[in-house]
Each structure stands twice: as C-alpha cells, then as structure tokens.
Length: 385
Image (cartoon, rainbow, N blue to C red; front, side, top):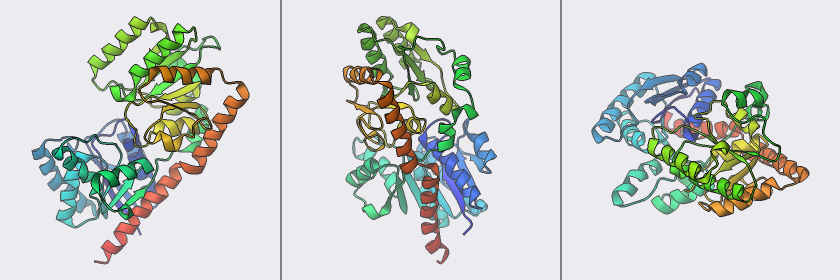
C-alpha cells in the first residue's frame, strides 16, 4: 500500500510535535509513499524537503474562527489535489479545520494528543475535545492516554499509545555533527571551568512552564552552600521579553550572572547534550511526554526531571536518572547536589543504564513503524468502501 499522508501542524519551528512531523515524513517517504505538510511554516522546512516531503503554507496557526473555517475548505482542496489517503492533525486549531475538511472529502481523520491542554470551563473543554475526536487517537504516553479517557470519556480501544522516539546514533555519536569543544566555543559557553563546577543544561523555550525560574533559584541555593555550577538555558524566547527580563533580574539579585548562560535556539541538540554534565527538565506543569528526558538518556547524560507527567514513565528514579518535586527549588537543589556528589562509577552506571533504557523502549524506528501501522489500519477499510 503506497501511502499519501497529509500532516497538519501550526508551525515548523522547535518542539516535540514538530520534530515528530519531520520523522514521520521521512518514514512515509522511505516506505515509498508521499508526505505533505500543511503549516504556517518555520525553520524545519528545509529538513522536511530534504527528506522528500512537500509543504503548503496556510495560516493553520490561527485561532480566529473565520480563518479556521477558510482553512477547512483549503485543506480539503489541497488534500483532494494531492490524492491524500488520510489527514493527521497535531494541534487543536488545525484539528477543527482538518476534521471539517475530512468530512468534505470523506477521508480518515487522525489526531495525536501532544499536550496536556489546560482545562477550564465548558468552552475550553469543548475546544480541547477535538483532539480526542479522530477516527484514531495517538497518545504519546500512558499518562496522556489516561488523561484523554478521564477528560473526554472515549473508549480506550480508540487510543494507541506511541511514545516519541529518538535516533540513537545521532545522540550516541554527537561528534559526527559538532564537537563539544566547538559547540562551547560557538555559543560562548564556559570551556575552561574548574572540574568541580558542572555544566547543567536546561533545554526548552523560555517560558514559565519550562521552569527556568525554579532552576535559577536552585542554582542560587547551591552557590549559597558553596556548591558552584553553571546553568545553560537553551531555547528561544519567542518574543517573551518581559519573562526574559525577569529572569535576568532574578539572576542579578542572586549574584550568579557569571554562572547562568543563555544560548538561544540550538539546532544541534546532540552537541548540547555532549557538553552537559547534568541535563535538567524543570517543567512546572506535567509534560505529555518530555523528549528532553529521552534524548539526554540516549546521549548517556545524567537527567534530573520534575516528577510528573511523561517523566515518570521515561525515567526510572535513581536508576536511569533522578526525579525532584515539581516547582520545588529546594528539592531540586538537593537532588542536584546529590548528583554532583556521586562517585564516578555509579554515575557512569546510571548514564549507561539510561542509554540502554532508551534503546529498548524509545527508538525512532519503533515510533515510525507503529504510526504507519495506524495509518494502514485506517486506510485499508476506507479503500474498500
């Protein structure tokens, strides 16, 4: 069966959902199919085209009802011209347009529930429910599958759990892209620091939910105990100037400006991890999956993560990494200090256990095979109609 798959996503910049679009595009093309992405665009476009994917620009990032209505007609027209077998929506606003388009042209409609999506009143719950309305619904963790069932009341046999996957070789051989020494130099990060001053890396866009404030507070507590470390905040501000200004003010008050480093968006994540002594995921709200936890383990880096959401599944506490109480800077500081005091042998043993754990459960190949299987299961009966 030759697949013609259309994926619809608001933008193509950084993020787990965006990265999955790239990986599924590659898998569809490698399987002899065709992949088309409808999006407002972004920095990942070149990579998608290099894999053989096509891109059509539409303002599917808009939540304006009129624009969403127009998008439905345009998605239907694009999919019909492309000869699509299936429409796969990966976010709420485009999902509303995509479901309407699928009904117009009688195509299977699938969703991936990528986020936790905050609940509120009746309207908010109704808006979120579109992500549980697909002919098939993919959840990227058991945590999200349980959340879908509890919030939307759908049958569990409509949900397929497909965790995100990582390409092991990319993270296991980072020098094949950029050497750690060169990465530090290119990003103005401390290269020649004392061996007892570890480099803690927190990847993620600069937004309160990612926990940068908690990380800075924990670092300040460590320094007050004379346990020095460096913190690298790697991610886009995406226009959040007030939040970033507040971070700088917090850093200045704690007098740790020489120990906190901003390096913006990072394209070569493997090189970033290779530089890190500790990788930190400090999200204050549960992550649906949390790719940082898996990527860091694939890189054989020590991971410390908030004990909620997907991280409870992807990290085995004190075996492949460490958990800390969410939004608790004191507990984070205590866990970081514990990691910093680990002897070399148990430290290495945990890091290698993390890599083995990812190889066994979170490969990109497994994710792609399972997703293409869901596609084929939906398309086959539809073809016979």
